[in-house]
Image 1: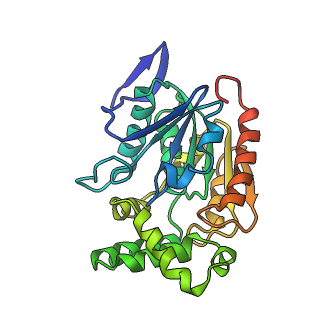
Image 2 (image 1 turned 60 degrees about the vertical axis):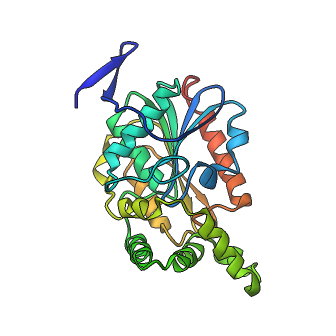
Length: 277
């Protein structure tokens, strides 16, 4: 696709018509949010949306099959999803932004930054991966297989086991496990299988050397779905990336770990030039 310019700035790949359901809140410099597989804007960022919106404009597109976005009619492609996120931001009046990616959203964020480099001021990549490690690849395959067999309760059980910390699980009474599974199942968007199919195909390793913007990589060290080594590989292959560890934190951050994440993110945002922070 050809390049085009906005306000005299070369902004990268031409954008499609936006078709994602988008959450918008707040005012100030823009933060574009990229959620994870089987998640959504509120599911991933809900604990910090109000805080961040005090001094930033939040733009949170939902992938196909999440939020109010229709389920995809064909397999998801990373380039198309990246372009749709940017189109959503531009449609919301935000020509440039800092991008916060969680899990699959980290790979989406990296691809946005390489396809639309002039629009992206900085990246925050949490529980991310450049390519699925064996644990994540096996989990994605299990989710697809179980879903194909209509064993959605087992998909939810796998999600609880993989995405919560051993400490958080230990605090749950055995009699309450079924309730936890039911709540997890109810929160899964219709596009979950499509999202994990994309997880199994993502590979942004070649993109990393092309990033020349400020990047913070956040590694939850207790993550059992995306192993911390994946975050370490991201940081090691991005020039001058800042690595932050959340000790013992799981793939889905609990309230205490999300509060620590917010402190790190706000400290990082304060280091950015005024138009980016």
